[in-house]
Amino acid sequence: MLRRAAAVLLAVLVPAPLAAQTSPAPKTDASMQRVDTVPIRPAPARPNPNEAAMLSDTSITAMYRAASRRIVAAALRDSSAWERMAYLSDTFGPRFSGTPHLERALDWLAAEMRRDGFDRVWEEPVMVPAWVRGEESATLTVPYEDRLPMLGLGGSVGTPPEGVEAPVLVVSDFDELTARCAEAQGKIVLFDAPFTSYGRTVAYRTSGARAASQCGAVAALVRSIAPHSIATPHTGAMRYAAPMADGANDPALAPPLDITPIPTAAITLEDAARLHRMQRRGTPVRLRLKMEARTLPDAPSRNVLAEIRGSEHPEEVIVMGGHTDSWDVGTGAMDDGGGVVAAWEALRILKELGLRPRRTIRVVGWVNEENGLRGGTAYAREHAAELPNHLLAIESDGGTFQPTGFGFTGRHDAFGLLEQVGPLLEPIGAGRITRGGGGADISPMRPAGVPQMSLSVDGSRYFYYHHTEADVPEVIDPVELARCAAAMAIMAYVVADMPERLPHGSQTP
Ligand SMILES: [Zn+2]
Image 1 (cartoon, rainbow, N blue to C red):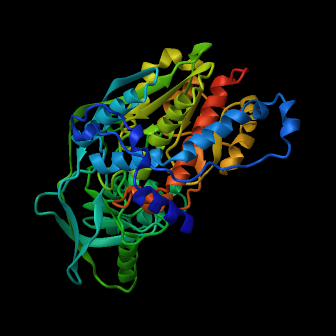
Image 2 (cartoon, helix red, strand yellow):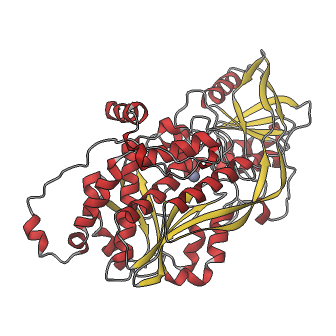
């Protein structure tokens, strides 16, 4: 904690001695300003007593040890990754699909990538959903008046202007709702389901309104999907249609609606617990929910792409990135500003060091992961013919905390090659290569056999901030983000440059 605080202080307080590195290009517009960087700490010096033995080693580990050290030193030399993430967050605000904020952020991202001088920077159009939150509130009316912190769920319908007011029925899970279905008629159902894992608990957010509507409820509330809270509601996507097999959450792809859509929102862990206690004591509880939420026609947006072309096999591609959109609360610093910036910085570092691999490395900022996955879907569709030559897809979308390694989904022989990259990542604590990895935006490439990989991080605090007003730059430590960039640069560079082509296939045989 102390180290983190010190690094943040340095990043914030030290005057910018590297300002001379900034572009002399005239600044025409606030969104085009280049971000300044400051040193964060000297490069780590780790003398290796086995240096001589390693010189005769022909393993991937040995071949790329020198390059990896240079990458780590370059990444940790200054706070450029953190400054770019903070600039992105502070300057454009929340980057929600369908908003001008997002489009201005994408303009900046593409312009900055062009200034970085990559071989190619381009944009590919994507139509995205445009859900608008509007004004919203949840007010306890009985036994006393109290306004509860809340966030409508993405995709929800609104209430009539006067709101809906009804008694509350609290249930712990779907089974309890099924057992008490008749009681839910005309009520506001609150799911107070304890957080186990995100994957399991998120079903109450995505499908709670559907289940409540099937029992005749007039609205549905969900305890925020988080393990810990300081009275912070967490938003996220929901859908009225039955769950889709592929996990996509695009309302446009959903089957025809077979229920009455009811308004739905998240409240805090504390309020869910309070209302549940009151119900157990037999205290009648009523709530009034007001939401202006509505869905506008789809809006134009884009994926933003940059690449360093391979020197020998430019048609073979290692693709990596994160998603550029965020929710409409907070500024998406962690989800997924840090992820996009880590991949982008990884490419910038390779360019700066003159490390041109044999194969192409492409960075993609996918759009609309949060409430549609349209960017990831469009990329896989537009590049379908190239996917047999997409050797690896890497996503960072689990927060850019201390990296611990990479998770991989693909063939055993591919895993064996990637394991040899692990020791190169150990100096920054990211040497654990584990089985099982991927990400939402790269998942549409999986049916084509593109091996899937995720940056693994210490995720213990991720869901404290996820989809909340608190997803802001302070969540991210400059050194940890720099290490994430270094880890992605090393992994992408080695796979793009190693003599052997990484075997294709996205299933473990
Ligand atoms: Zn995300």
